Image 1 (cartoon, rainbow, N blue to C red):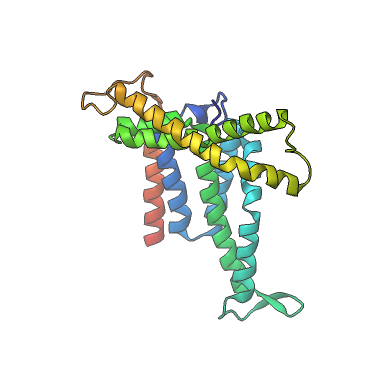
Image 2: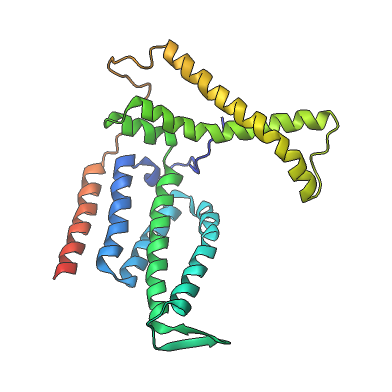
Length: 254
């Protein structure tokens, strides 16, 4: 079955890292640039994330993710540099619109933090299976019911896409026009929404009933089909990450 996750199945040391260590990495690499308040530290964190993306072989997958964020980044620059009151030093002007130096500095800090958050999060998403995420959380105490909900979220979109393709092929075989200009596509798409949504919800309900028939809600101790993912360097990696966080806090305070 398709998966809505962006996970890229490759062999790399980044893929081998367990999910909890990646969570610590996310927290630390988001916290350090914010604590430091430095654009340079933020750029360094971004550079490290880019290197890790390259080592994991997922750098190409990162490009469309960043591209989708360009409009947000451009909006931040325009709003912060030109329309926030209280700035005085004009850096450059475009007609009647003045872009202030203070605003550009503030905008650069926001953009660096945004990209840092985007990169550390995408690295985890691109190198971790959704099933591993859910299973790890369940082993650490997450309710199995909540785990099922999360798994259902990962599955319901591809199910809807598959159902839409099946219905669309059936309509096309009956001579219904489903391809052409935008108006034709929209006209063919709208009648599909109801059946697709209903069939997906029915499928989810049927799976839930099948699980209940197999004692899904029983309070017995849970077992797992796969062995727990163990990364042998997780302890030193976690210690290094936490030490970096502590050093950044001390440096900021002093």
